[in-house]
Image (cartoon, rainbow, N blue to C red):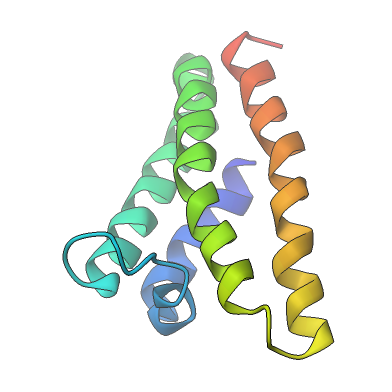
Length: 112
């Protein structure tokens, strides 16, 4: 999980445009600011998970992070409702896939 979060965090900075579209327009400020902020959060959580002494805190932080970005994934799926079948499938598939990620982060938070 740490490696995946670190990779996604780096992608937020190397390919920010791909993430800007996930940011709901109702949020204040620019989408790019939110993209960079979430990239920082992912890198920070990855760091917490990578260190055994902070792994439990990292698990809780990962749960919060995954829950915080879930509305963006709903928003992206909604915006893709008229896109190609492949794009729609990908955006919809991400929604239920976050549930096992949230649960896995919870197990880390409990020290399992």
